[in-house]
Image (cartoon, rainbow, N blue to C red; front, side, top):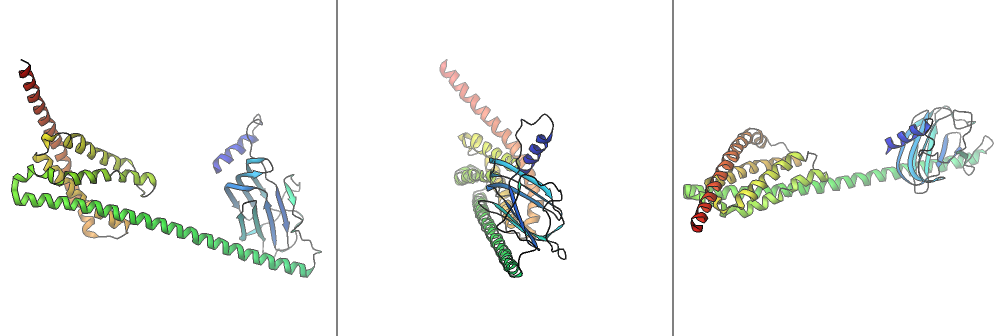
Length: 351
């Protein structure tokens, strides 16, 4: 939004572009004491406010309801003398924007004007309700100084409270994200561990006969895990995790394509050794991956997991890719043979 204001301002200043939309100047009312400047920008319901305050300059821009209605407003001017930005503050309120700007220590005196430019612009007005002069009595100045001190303290407390609220919101959101990621990764890791145990137990108990039982034993759980894995694509889109979208999308979409369009859709493949091996390698990879993600979420460095993830996992990944290619080729070949047999049977029946 700030860049938009800058572009509009630049275009409005060029010759021949007077018909284009411009950024309007808001009405500013100002007052002063010996120690401070008080500015009130008459702009209500401000959106996208940007404030740049330096010792010599004030820049404000925002979209709100001002003298020209709902419009983008922008003002940029240099002070008559340098100010103390560390002791200054501002508030964006519902009906206006308020600045309390401190004059430099040792230079507490009344200014003849607010701006460095001697020519007074039409948008700058005097706030007579807060105006002080050198003729103001000492008691009035002390009273005003006390009011200013109270307002400054109130502003500081309000700002501190707002910061604490924002910090608490961020902590709550962060905790909810962490809790969700821990639960999700723990459930996925636990289910894949169960699949791995079931397949290895059947393999050790029945030997090669387990190949024909693997699909029926774990396919439902594996399908559920793979459907839940679409959350890994949604998480970066929603800002839950700070990773890219393409890598999890390719991984999740590719696995679901293989699982649902090839394996599940063709019953002839359910009892094949390639499917058993694919499920086993698949699960072994995830048994390492999901606990590793949990350790990252809780910011805990677990060396065995890191070693498994980046050493053993890389070997599993190579085996997995080889099995995917070999298994895909085997499955396609097997499907082709089955279709040829069915086609041959139909042809013989037709004869």
